[in-house]
Length: 107
Image 1 (cartoon, rainbow, N blue to C red):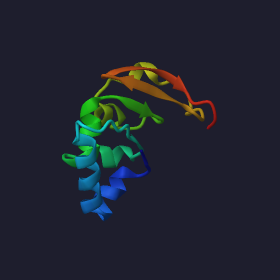
Image 2: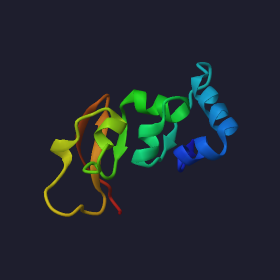
Image 3: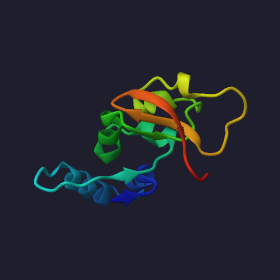
Image 4: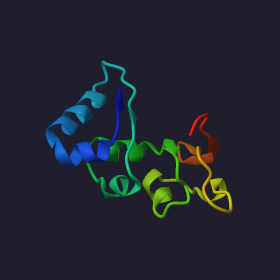
């Protein structure tokens, strides 16, 4: 399942966000969620589907130098940040709190 702007979904449609969270909690069904959110939205999430995703400490961070990005994903991202201006498609792949540099094929 793919959800764009899951942080906005939680603010504008809380019932649907709660349903999404409940759907992901069901053990009898195997769902994979790919979701996007802003760094600020992720930092402000203390419950619901976005908070659950943050707790997993696994994901892709496309702007690892952005203030709060490491806190939002629960990993140290400093080693994945290159000096100079951000390059299109560069980011960090975080798996269980361990980050490594990432280059997305197409920006």
